[in-house]
Image 1 (cartoon, rainbow, N blue to C red):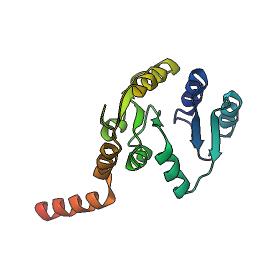
Image 2: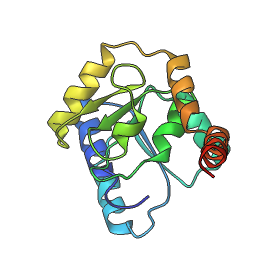
Image 3: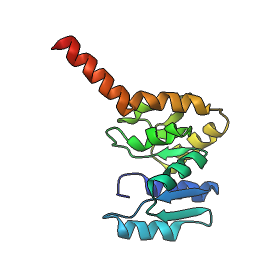
Image 4: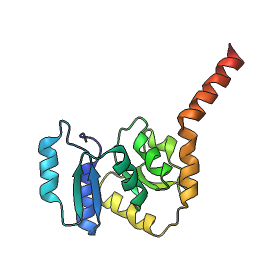
Length: 159
């Protein structure tokens, strides 16, 4: 857990909307901000600390949505991990998120990284239906196997 991931936005929005929120990860270089966030958090917000890969997969699979809130993310593998479990994403409309989320199919975007902007996106998301298989199939486009196959094909065709 580091700064710049939008955790303060997630906590403030969850508090304002009375939502449940689970935050996984240790505060690497983010200790004082982390403590402030814990102070702001309401009853429905859980700070889980370190979780194993298995626990993280279960959290993804059990989530209604995964929040991707960084305003300057180069790719963001966590979105793809969430989609691989069938969980759609609510993401800030920028950076690498534009490469990994299909608007209306695997999640939605929001433009303003504010409590109001995220809250509006959550309300919109709640009115939509996302298919688990759409998320999973899209996430497979980012698999290691596909990458290896396409690199081999490229090298073979251009060597």
